[in-house]
Length: 218
Image (cartoon, rainbow, N blue to C red; front, side):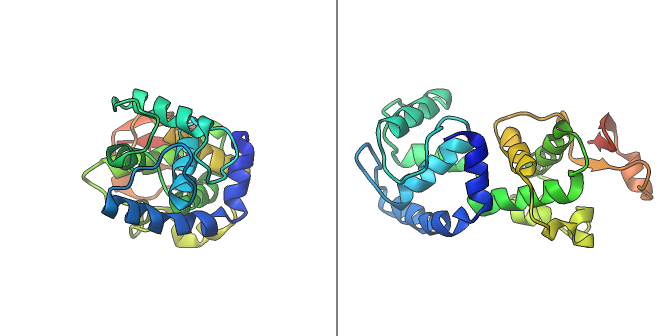
């Protein structure tokens, strides 16, 4: 399955199915379970979804740990310096979760991108998603997607309600591209529209670059 179809499935409600898998993941961690070729179920769904975010698994998410899932897991392990076994042990699972997001988190980021930057170029939309990820890495901000997005006065779209609109396909694509490492903002923690920004504080931030109607800053 290609990326666009994966994103569309997410938008149409895979949160219900994959939300159930998160409990399975927690249970797997508690019991230090190993997921490997031939296994089925919630943990496999979650692993496939997270591998898709990184562009490592391209087929339909079916909850079946087949040869393609094994190959994707091995590629992930190789990229992150883990023992290349093709099976998901506890360390692989934790590393995978640390570098990817749940369906709900992707949905929140896509809604923010759509609310804040739907009129911008695709590069500008990716840059907005990258700012969220940059804040997650910074000790100046909360360490969960939800807390970053809903931090008081952090994003105009949350304050004025535009956040609650249904995201389009490009918003999901922008989030996935940011997760995979594209940061057009070049490490920005803030952005603002110079035509509407009235805060003296935001104008005082060191500016990095302008993309469309947004100036990105540190």
